[in-house]
Length: 453
Image (cartoon, rainbow, N blue to C red; front, side, top):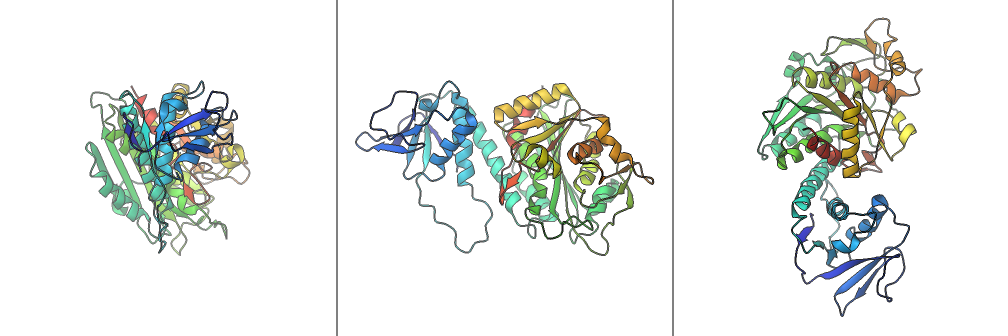
């Protein structure tokens, strides 16, 4: 559900902020996030303690309101503005968080919870922010579409299913061109690393390209490449008993696709494409075994020293395709790539690698607007040495001697960019948690596209 933006009072109870450090009615209960209602005035106040000091702590206040409102509230947006919260940020918080909590995501439960809670609407005596509200609503919808694919079970959300779902959903959007490659076409493109990962699968691989040309006069073109491993067993280097959350390994592909869809719906004057590299990583008698050597789309040979390092394999072909066939002026990939990024950044930050300081600054600024936490990680030739240990191929895809594998993986991927400026986003720690997908970086990628010109 997307909050209604209203310029006039309706019949719902008006909810105002009561910041601890500001003046408010004496009868307001001073308990964190507690709502005191004045029924005779049709007004309520939510107490916000002085410990709420930034946007991220404010989100918890918003969640307490929108997750399960006990009645219909009309939010007095202006009352939530403080010295650390702009009106734009207040609006963003309410639109995105209500959409998050009210999203109708995949569920096979026989009995669904009945939604008996109240609703919220947003009140501001001005039309100045209506356009921003509509933009945020578009982004929120893209995030929830991403989240829905993320949580859909892997026996349903196969590579073939996702490709068809994207093709059908995006057909409704003016200005988008969707191209789907099947196994034959993938083979013709020499995307052999993708085929190697797919070799043990019961499902065909798919490459889905979503192209948007919002500025035909410009030669600038961003290409977003997404890892789309619909389920990761680890292949012959099996993960063993621990495979919880492996359905989320396709998150990167959904993120980049729906970011481009939002960009098209917002009619931004930019050129952006998404490339979804879709397959599962399974085991059967045809599965690729460790020590196999495969020639990539770029022509570089890769010794597959670990079949559980499959993400960098499919991305390698995707990045080269973006650089060579789609003629990217900038490449960005998004992937749940490495466990070591969690060791470095936990579940707080997405790890970002960039070959270009200028583009990193744009990306960092976009993430700041989107209020998504990112941290720049190092690209250095020292981290590339473990990728060159193979005695039989140009590269190997994993080294057991390298502890900083997230850095090594980034350097591996850089080899397939044809020296096009490049940003790599490792979201292994931020894409999902406890069975819930977050659609992370969708908002950042939209904001980043605005900075193309």
